[in-house]
Length: 265
Image (cartoon, rainbow, N blue to C red; front, side, top):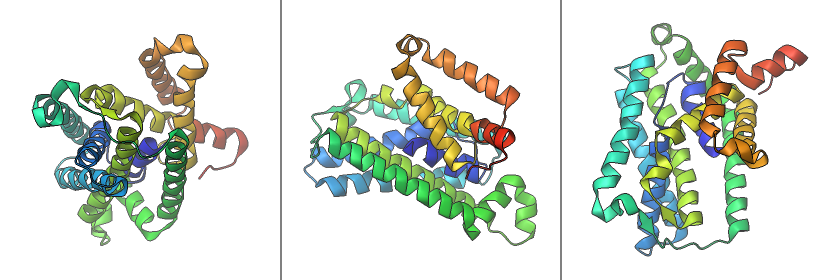
C-alpha cells in the first residue's frame, strides 16, 4: 500500500509516468541498512532511507523537466536498471549477496503497526493533497503542462515536488523492509517489482487514493489466497492489466463509480 500510494502521488496526481519506482524502494532499504549496520539508531536509519530516496527523486524530477510521457517512462526504467547495476557491482553494498544481519529493533507486530500507521498517514496525506491547491496544480500539470504554464503554475517545481514526495515515501517503505527482513539483496528491487507496483495503481484506478489501496490489497492477497496463482503471478498481473485497460481504463475506482454512482476518493 505504501509503495502503490507513493507511486500514485507521482503518476496518478501529477501524470509523470514512472517505471523504476522499485529503485527508490531499494535506495531507502540500502541506506537504512547501512546506517543500522553502522550502529546508528533505528529512527536515524529510517530517516536516512527517506532522505536518500527523496534526494534521488529530486534528481529524477529535474530529468523529468526535459522529457514527457513515453520518454519519461524510458528514463525512469533506466534509473531502475542503473540502480541494480550499481548495487550488484559494489562490494561495500554486498554486491549480489546484499547486506545481511541488519539489526531489527521491533518484533513482527511492531513492524505491522509501523507499516499500517505509515500507510494510513499516506492515505490522509494523499486525500489532503488531492483537495489542496497543490493537488489542483498537480492535476493541471497532468492534464496539460503547456496550459498550466501559461496560467502561471510552476510546472517544474510541482514535478520535482511530486517526485520528492513519492520517492521519499518509497524510501520509508524500504527502511521498514530492510529492518523487518534483516536482509537486502538487489533482486528484491528489480524491474518486476516496479511493474507490480504500477499494476496495483492501474488496477485500483490511477489517481484514486481508495482505488489504489484496493488495488494493492487485491494484488497482494491474490497469490496468498490462491496459492496456484503464485507460480503464474506475472501472467495473472499482465492479464489483469490488459483487461483493465480494455474494459475499465480508470480501474476499480472507475468501475465502482459507473455501477453505483459513488465517486471514490
